[in-house]
Image (cartoon, rainbow, N blue to C red; front, side):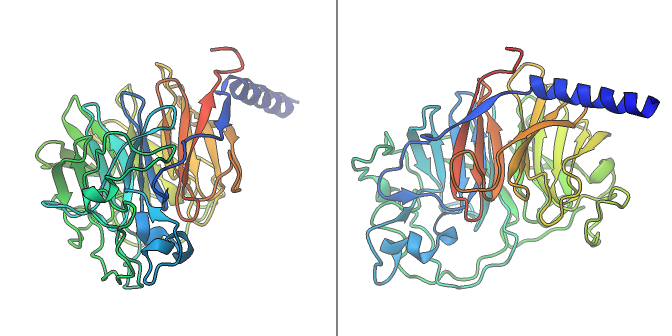
Length: 416
């Protein structure tokens, strides 16, 4: 009888928490169509800045199939389409405000940009998280000439103002049929002003460092900014197994840690077993995020878990999400709800193709939304999630998903 009573209480508590979770509906018309016959490649990051502008980074031409980039082939295979510039800025209504991205002087543009962050000063950070060494397969790089996008045309979402530094993929230019040489493995992060001016590079393409290096990275996946401390946290996690902190101005190394705040280990942890004891090492650090109360949240994707730390790396707690998930794991990215307490955590789960909603205090799962599919409100390759000041949720889809979506916040069932 006691067991039944406890079980019933847990069910009631779960139902109460689920009733309080934010209610969201997809905006099927967001964003507005891009002009210039532009399309997105595999989306690898979504962020929201202090103005509630939405920033998107995608893989560009290297992630498009031939039937998606006909005009760039030799000979041309049709009039559609061209890869959009790899960094796009939208307003909350879905209009494209600016675009830039691609190789330029003084920095190494990643072969696979991975993750995007807008810091409190309006600067934009991206990581280079290429997982597999590419080969020359005929996939050409997008053009980096900012003049390529100057002829905006009459599309319903043509960029205003022509803010196109390194605008990779304007109409009429996209590296026709040129075989791309093998690219060096990404091992760096980049910092730009919001208009695309290069500010800082940490690490170098092709210069792989291990999980205890103080000088480099290995396929980092994301960045979190602590503007007050002038520090940047890097999820050094597609090649290494750690979080590492640098000075946000100079790029100087500050500190790093692995799972549970311990020294990271690069030994192969073997296949994930949901029935085994929790892994003492991160398997794949796919995100790092800072909450308003100064805690550091780390996505350990293939361990199906989130770990929480103090800023000095001291371990606080952990929670699992769909812990029986195998394959690429369940915790790809996370974002906090917009209320002052950041009561909820949204977790992008690309393996199960849904967004989980967790109670931040306990890391207990209270609800979810989405399922696998191609229509609005469903997901394929869900890898990114972000939240604006009104509680609206934005998602990005990697691999063949190649889109961003907006989910409108209607508050909670209790009207909070």
